[in-house]
Amino acid sequence: MKPFCFAKNEIIESKFASCHPLDIGMIRGYAIFDFFRTVGPNPLFLDDYLARFTDSAKSAHLPLSYSREELAGIIHELIAKNELEYGGVRMILSGGISENFFTPASGDLFIFCEPLKLPSEEKYKKGVKLLPVEYVRPIPRIKTTNYTLPCFLSVDWPSQGAEDVIYHNQGLVSESSRSNIFMVKEGVISTPASHILEGITRKKVMELAENVSVRDIQLDELLDADEVFMTSTTKRILPITTIGNQVIATGKPGNQTMSLMSAFEKMEKNMVFSTR
Amino acid sequence: MKPFCFAKNEIIESKFASCHPLDIGMIRGYAIFDFFRTVGPNPLFLDDYLARFTDSAKSAHLPLSYSREELAGIIHELIAKNELEYGGVRMILSGGISENFFTPASGDLFIFCEPLKLPSEEKYKKGVKLLPVEYVRPIPRIKTTNYTLPCFLSVDWPSQGAEDVIYHNQGLVSESSRSNIFMVKEGVISTPASHILEGITRKKVMELAENVSVRDIQLDELLDADEVFMTSTTKRILPITTIGNQVIATGKPGNQTMSLMSAFEKMEKNMVFSTR
Image (cartoon, rainbow over all chains, first blue to last red; front, side):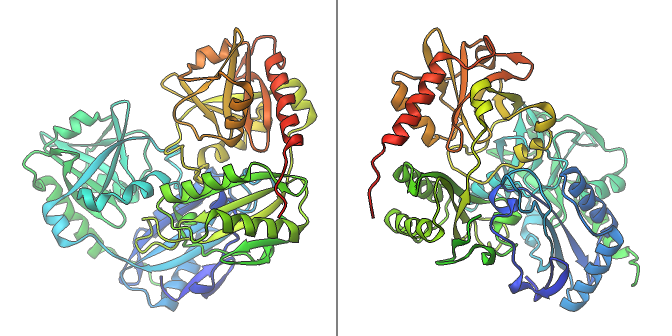
């Protein structure tokens, strides 16, 4: 983490940030968050992320005492103070101290700046492996901090050569632990419609790709696709070439995936950022 | 909470306890805990709870630098310092600061003493209502802090006259959000075998009741039972008289439930506690 953060209404040294351990963010895993990247010092798609963060707070019954404009102001101040370049910004709103240690209360807002570790060049060139896991996230549309299962499973990913998991339930694919999933079959790009968090990168890819079919996707279909890729803030577009023991098509990143990867990077570079 | 707690290796004032907001206990909901009651100042079934807590830590890949004996020592000291009587003790082990903000690391241990609010007399006399929810807890055998879904749903329980939820998946009942479930049909007591946390109260009830059938239970069966009850540390044995819109049998606590309630309270009173 970078030296300064926003914690409980003020900018302080990150190492002094603290929350109470009885906050239901800790004792019940009840908190919401969001995370975005900066291009140089400029927050990428900030309006989208702030909209999602404030929506998550509202849906999760957690009062947030800052407007989107105020949050943007704090974020710009924090990025400048940390001299953050090509980093990540994490916003957390905890569930608060709850009288019955359970029901959502009124929590604390934290904003941290972090160095960012993007996937290696090799992963973009060769694609990655996902492990199928039968699971569906509860209330996936809200960006909660509920990652108990994938954190637990992640201990075994290195030995399995896996980047992450892919969730499926009753035959239907939803998402990876922190990414959305896309497939290409006979030229048509599709992405799951249900039980997902609507990723900002997913939204931008859908704008770039046009005519993406948003529908239910069976795991069997995905295994039989011409191309599969995942999208997330920290990965942009990352080709998936193996799912479990199944190699996808030729086992190499496909043409449409690579073309979208280029288009996305170009869009990022051409972004005009508002100066404050 | 009571005035003193154990936090990061020392007994301090509870209000000064703190964890870092970037601990994955907060940003990924990755932490384990346990909770037990005291009878007067004496921890009830302490050995069972400490065994489960240390097992949870190990299973969750979280190093715990205290033995069960050392934990018992700290707990007795904390209870004495807080003059806790008929209260609750909460142990939390956070997931720690993780280099990749995801994989389990090495966290902090916290122990708090809390006043305890038992269910009202009326609830024991009339029974309570549970709401069926299609869900199955991931890694339920580990006592994680993963309660995102029920905390979210709990906002609506008062208006629905509900005490809690009852989870079912593909027709099979598992548990309530923080309690185990039992049913009685034609004199036979049964409790779900799979996808549950093995509650300490559940274990004690099985010792008291003898011949409890541990098996898969369909939701339909439960709705058609003669008696249904839930067990937990803070509820002991609480009759369930309504599930969703369905009244169970006569809608009153059954004889076997009431007999087990008496037996459990008697066992508690007759416990001989080791003096330290």
